[in-house]
Length: 225
Ligand SMILES: *Cc1c(COP(=O)(O)O)cnc(C)c1O
Image: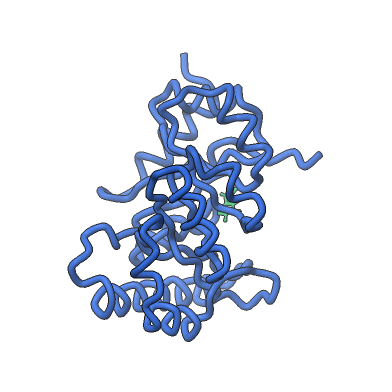
């Protein structure tokens, strides 16, 4: 028999267009819940706190691909560098340099996404379009052999106005296409467009997303302790 989590997971997966990857956001949910989703076939999970992630990583199956989706402090990079599969919210040059350094120390290449700040809230992190363009233009990243920039990530404004959300996703998709053409024309790996959460993932996939980060819709409300 399927658990509620497994049912939710299957209904989200059934809605996703071909080629869209689901990152199951398991922050604040216990390892048992992740195990349930794992047993239903899910392998990619996202967490936003280093300590919580490290504990879960230790006890859960080794073939889980962990994505770090929160704001990551530079002094925490070293703890996740040995095993993290993707750092989705690379939101500053300083952080990218630290990820590069720790990746090289671990003799690996870490996949990252550049986080764009397109939302109205000041509180959100990320590069403005202009900052992102400037960073890519300056080209220092080409010498960072420990990171591989695989695409863009963003969060839409926290609003009920669907049009606002759509405009932000559409802008993100335009920027993705611009950057791919200008800087990554011969890099097949620059292909990830991570936008869309529980309340807007279908709007996101209609506007170019091919990686949705869905938590509540699968695991239920989070218990913030
Ligand atoms: C928590 C979180 C999500 C998932 O949010 P839900 O509304 O629970 O689906 C997605 N992306 C980021 C960056 C988050 O912090």
